[in-house]
Structures are given as C-alpha cells and as structure tokens.
Length: 84
View 1 (cartoon, one colour):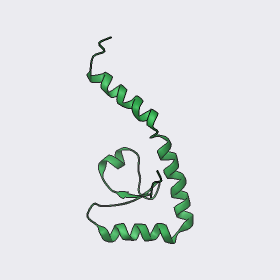
View 2 (cartoon, rainbow, N blue to C red):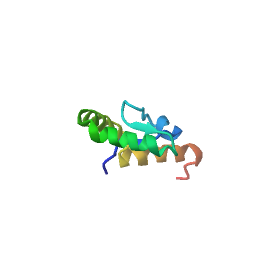
View 3 (spheres, rainbow, N blue to C red):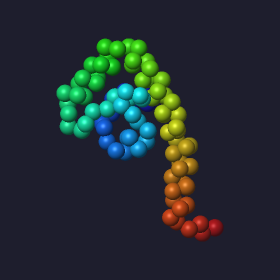
C-alpha cells in the first residue's frame, strides 16, 4: 500500500516517528482547510513529494508485517506467562 504522506497530527503518529516536514505533512484533526493545503502542496511540489516519498519508504520499512508480529509477541510475553 502506498502512503500519501498526509496524515493527522495525533500523538500515536508522532510516537511512531512521523514528523511534519521531515517524513510527512500533518494537519490537526478537523482542519479540512489545512488538509486541502497539504494535498495541494504535495501535488504542486514534485521534488518535495519525491523527498517525502523516500522518507516515507524508510519509515514503512520499520513497519513490515514480520516486525509487527515480533513486537506483538514481545508485548504479549511481557504480560502473559509462558505455559510451555
């Protein structure tokens, strides 16, 4: 799946490492004018779109399915005793 690079400025995304202007464009929830501005900016600035696209790809490499599953297993192991 391809990421658009335009996301809501919410804590969970910031906690994951998304940074406005570095690897995405963020806008507050409920601000359609800024959302439209960010989308127009991406459409009107191909070099910046390409740069953000590379940064997005690097971010997404850290969220591959196997890594996600391994992290869930680690978290579960911390709270559920091993019954083997």
